[in-house]
Structure formats: structure tokens, C-alpha cells
Image (cartoon, rainbow, N blue to C red):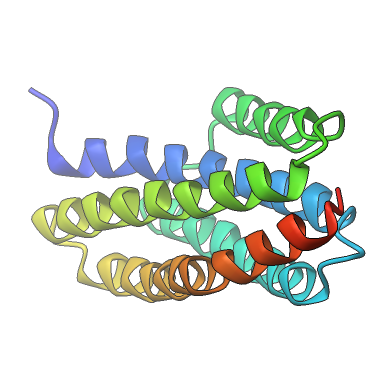
Length: 163
């Protein structure tokens, strides 16, 4: 039977790969958003947060005498790049990117809630506290996306600006 600690390690590896994926996706998308300065700035801010989150998750793994998974991390990086690049040819890239970005934030939120519960079950209160801080950043980003998506849509609809 798999223990909560073993699940925690496995799922922290998933979270690390998820953050690598998010960083690639966010940074590549932000680079192309010249006509949407508020969105670009918030994405760039979240890129910095995401890199820090990945580092924190990696430190949690080290506290458990574990390391990241090269396979999961590699797949996450490739997926993040592919997701960001998939919008290049869409005339409504900013809209699709913003909607997908908001959905991805909620995906991360649910994952961190599961990780917090697992860390608590494994008796890893310190790791749970780190994950709770990361969760707060993800919640703030999701809220920003939700609050600002209407303005991005109005700008796109008014101007038809791709980026």
C-alpha cells in the first residue's frame, strides 16, 4: 500500500513539472502581448512567482530526500512551449491564451489543495505551509485573470488586435 508520504513525493514531482510547464507557457505568451500592457505585466510578474514556486516545490522534495522527475519535468516543459506556440497562428491568440491561462490557474489551485491535504496526512506541516503560500499566489493570479478578462475581451473586440 502506498503511504501518504510516497504520494506526496510523487505529486510534488507532478507539481514541479506543472510549474515548469506554466513558466514556459506564461513567458512565451507574455513576450507576444505588446498591445495588452496590463496583461503582459501581470503575466511577467507571475512568471517570476512561478519560477519561485518551482524552486519551493523542489526544496520540499529535497526535505523529503527526493528529487524532481526528469521525465515529468521534460514533458511539462515541452507541453508548456507547445501550448504557448499553438496560439501564434490564431488571430484571437490573446483571448484564447487568457481563457486557457485562467483555466490553468484553477488547475494549479486544485492541485495545491490536494498537495496540502496530502502533506498534512503525511505529517509534513512545514511542507503544507509552503504549499499554502504557493496556493495564495495561485488564487491571486486566478482572481486577477477573472477580474481582468472582460477588459481584455473588450479591447480585443474593439480593435481586433491579435497581440
